[in-house]
Amino acid sequence: MTSSKNKVLEFKVGDWIDIKIVGIRDSEDPPYKIESIDGDVYVIVQKEGSYVHRMRVSKDKIKKL
Image 1 (tube, rainbow, N blue to C red):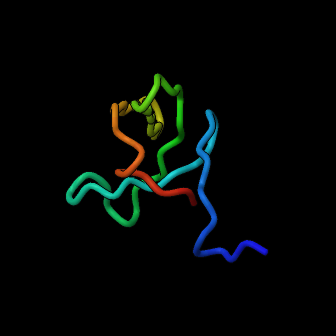
Image 2 (image 1 turned 90 degrees about the vertical axis):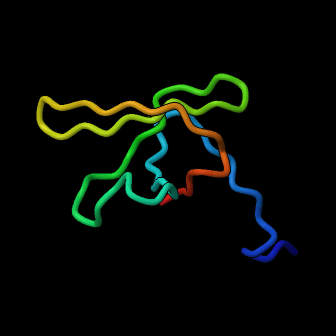
Image 3 (image 1 turned 90 degrees about the horizontal axis):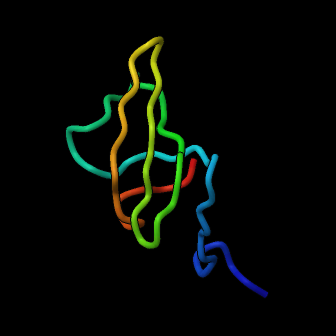
């Protein structure tokens, strides 16, 4: 039996995530979505109207919503 603490989170393209970098996201900002995965680098995107913010981050900087 696997407990939720030991569960390894696998990220895939299209997952909604929260970023764990201080100062990047306010509580009222929309979440980020994984756009692509290139090895250990995740390209995440946040869209708000016509504004698009893209970042390249490592797996340890994001958490699944």
